[in-house]
Length: 270
Image 1 (tube, rainbow, N blue to C red):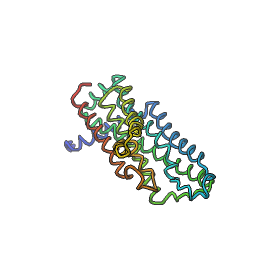
Image 2 (cartoon, rainbow, N blue to C red):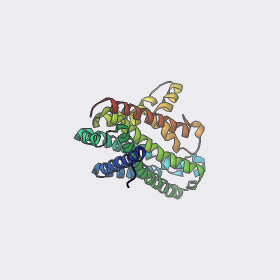
Image 3 (cartoon, rainbow, N blue to C red):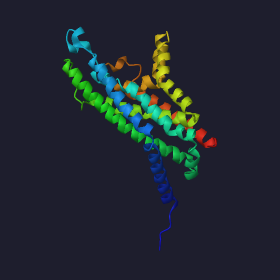
Image 4 (cartoon, rainbow, N blue to C red):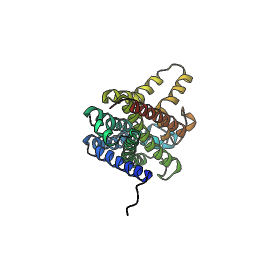
């Protein structure tokens, strides 16, 4: 006699099926792998170029330069976040552009389950690429800066691990912001422009404020400036916001954008 299927088991099976479907859709897109490659390459390349351009020749000795070598090595995270945002935007808006969202919602009527599955797959892929990019940046920066005579902390030092883990988390949260914006706006161009403006245009506008106090508060509230504070390993008191508090600000942006996207997804037809 076959055991009856419980609602919990059926729900769990449907959840795994939705997750597999989202994984299949995302991995079969050529843009997914190009953007993941771009995330890794840009993160490593920009960090390496920044470190290669640094010279201790202008200082009495390398220690007197007071450079945060870890933060310099992770300069490329600022560029890599753009690839993470675009990847997440295309993961959702691409379905609206092609009309496959109707098929997706017909196969999975649970819209929040579909969004959660898509977010899980986007986060997993972004985290994997981010981990490779961040590790490559730290290794490249370590070699380049050590050759210049800078004192480079060990890769297992507490501050370095925090900066590395935080940088990966920053890229994942940036992707979630992109996913939420794309779910709310449904249009690729509008979503990509809006999400990228949050990470690149907003910090520039904050820097244009004449009043130093207002500028500091604006930097604390911009997702890119706040989130990227996690890369710093020294002179933390000079930052506009602390490393973990900055990630909290970026996390709030991700939560709000996903919540707005979820509301639009539930309220509007495909």
